[in-house]
Image (tube, rainbow, N blue to C red; front, side):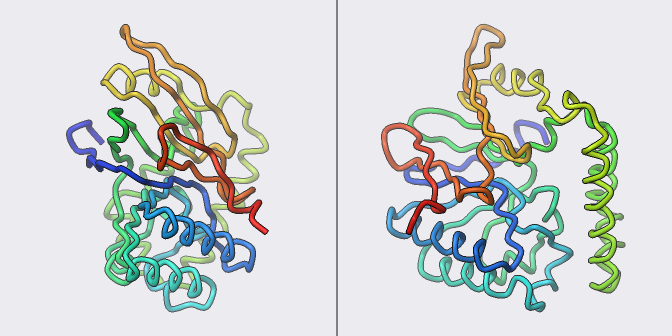
Amino acid sequence: MSRSEIPVIPVQRCLIATDLHCDGSARRLTWLRRLLNRCQQLEASLLLLGDLFDQWCGDDQMNLDVNQHEVGALRTAIREGLQISVIPGNRDFLLGSGFESHTGIQIHGDAVEIQWGGQRWHCSHGDLFGTEDRGYQRLRKTLRHPLTRGVLLSLPMSLRQFLAGGIRSGSKRSVRRKHRTRMQPDLRMVESRIAEGYDRVLCGHFHVSRQEVVHCAGRSGEFQILEPFEERGAYLNLCGATPELEWVGETS
């Protein structure tokens, strides 16, 4: 996605989270509801950086029991005035217009630019930064091609779930075999975003918390991998003068 294609979202009060991996379990549903309640308390919008769902095989998944409560919680929050934006991740890239119209959530492409506190932030799921994992990048390109997507969505849900489970199992085995350097973000891509004028590059996907200053082309900016929500309920609070990392999992 070129810079000109990235949607710009001016925000004043916003919470950002990534890798919620909602799977129908009681804990993740509880944490999702806490996050939505926190947004409503702070009168803040919500930006989700991918993998909202642990597995999303098409919008007809909304008819299944597994994620009905989570979809319902999101839909209710939207109806009560909350603004939610989602960047699909590698687990839920099949989120589509049916989900968008049913819930009211706005689905974006690979990245968005948010403007907050006089700064420009480049926000994405982060999987495109893993350039050394060439096998994954080839698979990603194939699965997200419109023709492949159309074929997948034409299959019965049971077959889609079976295929998704096979891809996940294969991915886990592959990750265990891969050298650690292949599972790291490509800082050259981060540097290019800073050189384009972004003050912060924010992503998830890598399931490690990381923050550092990056220098490129006479500019400096922050690169941050946000802690995955699924571990402790982490989110970034942009309602004050500075970004604050907070956790819903620590709420009694």
